[in-house]
Image (tube, rainbow, N blue to C red; front, side, top):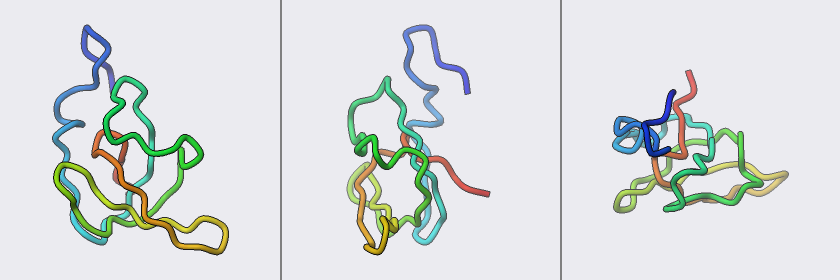
Length: 80
């Protein structure tokens, strides 16, 4: 998607809604610092565990451990 004039992503990416159990991929948007996951999780796929405020808890598998990552929806993309 293209960014707007000032470098921010479009509003539909910021206001995106996900359902519990939906599979998502973490794709960090550098223009938005709020709710940004650690860069080592870039490109990792996981499932939405729950919604907390404006952010989502994403359950991922890191080597042999399951982890919960808190992320703003602008940093998440739906996997088809």
